[in-house]
Amino acid sequence: MDGFWMAIVLIFLITRIFKLLEHRNVVSQRQEPQPLSKEQYARIAEEIAEIKREIAEMRDAYTESIVSLQADVRQLRHRIDSASETQQEAGTASTASQQSALNRNLGERTG
Image (cartoon, rainbow, N blue to C red):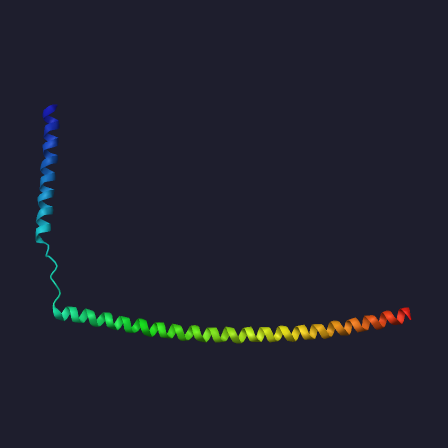
């Protein structure tokens, strides 16, 4: 029985060694990253500048739409305030005429 287990352990170790050797071979075949050339660096810098320009354009458009929306909100608030005042004035006039009618009606009954 001891020989059986020793054979299993030996097979396991041999398999493990081959896997490690294969991994070592794969790692050694990998290419190290090369430093960027001046042309590549210039191209990347140009792409970054283009992205920054696009972001600035989007920010400007966003700011313009915010300003436009703020103006719309101010206009709507003014319209709501005007409508509210008109409604209150109409409500006050209506209430005053109703009160006057009630007073006349009450005066006619008591008088």
